[in-house]
Image 1: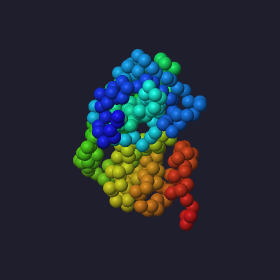
Image 2 (image 1 turned 135 degrees about the vertical axis):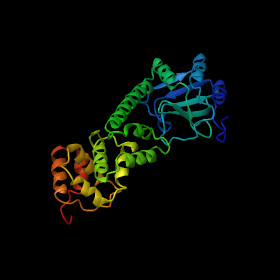
Image 3 (image 1 turned 45 degrees about the horizontal axis):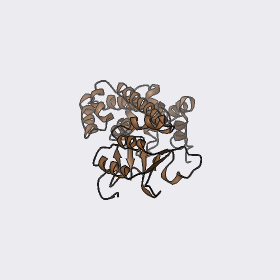
Image 4 (image 1 turned 90 degrees about the horizontal axis):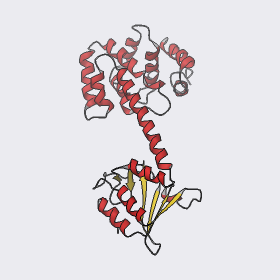
Length: 287
């Protein structure tokens, strides 16, 4: 009934469910549906029609196949008990195994609410957790923009949204706004110091834009700029991250900057910062 070479459509979902006598929804990925501890809901009769409406999708699919297994799993069975479809939800916003790609639900929130009303609360809890995470990501993005050097926040905003060519435009503006190399490097180092104190959840790609700009500068010039005036805590954070970046060519950090970094990170750094220090500029000479 499902042609895996065809794009997914709402009409296909409705056609499959119209042939169903029973739909079993299990709060588990497809390979764990037999787990006796997994919550489950059996849907029959008019409720199948309700579910059919809630599973409406963006016709044509999204052109992707998410690699995670997804949950809950939806098992569609005919009157004889034979399985005619097995789908899984992904991130509470999409559905898998509907054709040649995954498809986005028109209203994933409504589906999560309906499942919760019928005793399956996992999707609603996950949706709420994802919403909280998105709020935190949005707040962090705005704080990163506020941390941008003067005159760069407007150009950094499309970078934070991964718009095409945005980073190239930012780089051109940096060069115009900060033609003096010493001032430019010190401003970017301060900005680069934003990320290390933001927790252990990883660094968004856009936040590494200051690092990528710094890596276009000659390393000798970077060290000259850092020695031009005392460094504040944020600048020391930025330097510590820069010299432990994978793209850094492991040029030795000159004294007394190296000693200053070790003292700063040992006293105030996060655990990841201390780890990178021990395996980078903080290693004993010859180690």
